[in-house]
Image 1 (cartoon, helix red, strand yellow):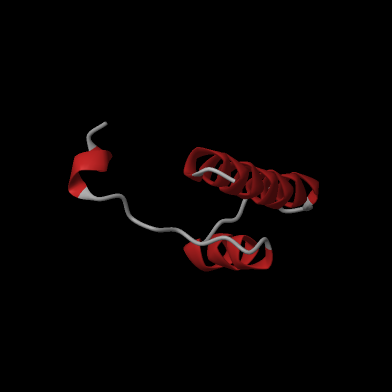
Image 2 (spheres, rainbow, N blue to C red):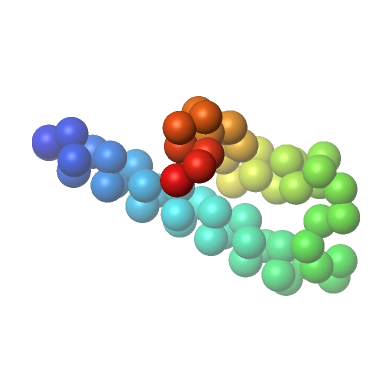
Length: 60
């Protein structure tokens, strides 16, 4: 598997997990989280985390 294939597969997995987390939020009686901690908990349940972009990436 080439590096590009690996990165594409990794991106697809992240997209799948994020879709599941957002789908779960949409089915919640409360809708989207009202606190950062709740949002982080939903991401953790989906196996995701927030990572800041480097300064170069943040502008593009």
